Length: 415
Image 1 (spheres, rainbow, N blue to C red):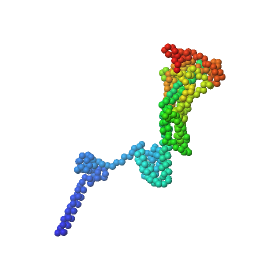
Image 2: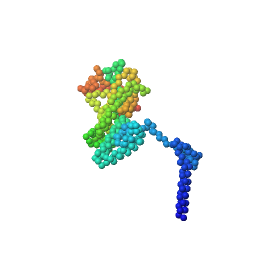
Image 3: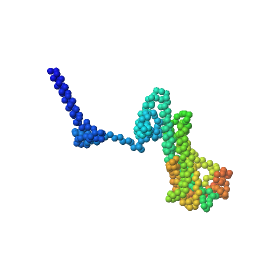
Image 4: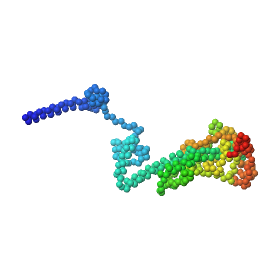
């Protein structure tokens, strides 16, 4: 009885193994796909239906392909370090070199992942030792210095767009007039808008304060701000590179004056340095005082009005004074109609400007100077006076005595 049972079990096992072998041998997945060393898979299933009954066309077209990133989107490790401003870290050589020894080319994202991974490994290796702590502190200091190096430019850019100009009426020396040319002189007075004067120093203080640290390699830098109705000095200790860059940017400012005709065409143009430096950041809050030293410089009435014929007091005011001289012939003088003054930045771009249309209401515009030009009791230009005499009466202009504009009743308007 037992022998019969064993025989039945053995025969059943052999039958099952045979059936399974037949199924595996005849199943479509047992055949290699096309393009991978075997015959094409039979079957008429719809494309893309892998494992469908009778096989599938989609499964028959499967193949492995590797597409390399375009050359212009990859770079070697040193190039990536220069681009990102990073310091190299130790990583396995097979990430840096191909099998033939050529430098490995990866994309920006790939190098970033590798660099981040092996920075973490290096920190774990150094953790616990004094060298690791010092290395971490030095890396932080380098990061702070790199950020500080980006501060001067936005501070400089924020202080250029709120200046305005006034221009004196053209004057000339009556002793130097010739048939071929006449030299006229004009002063441009640059002043700062109140909004910039009140707010600029505080903005600059907020940007510089995080980077002020004591140290032997630090420079003292002072800034005047306007806070709560008072001018307040601020003291910073910055890297010498930061102070040097602030000086370089501000010292590059220039002032350009253009003489224009009625249509805006240029007659003459001249550029001179604005005379700025890093101290200009404080001068914006409290501009320097213009002192003409009237005891040594005589001002004619023409020098006390601006190009538009308005009253101009340029002594004891706060701002910057720039003197320009142009030598013109009679035809150019006759065309003069407008004056344009511009503040140019480090790149030569216009940041602040004013265009002023002239007036013919100005009084006699000849400077006192030259042989026989100065009346009795009045000094020549630039010489200290010996006798304080009264200025001669100026001829009446079109608006009234002394060129003063008049009201509807003919009475002079007092400014």
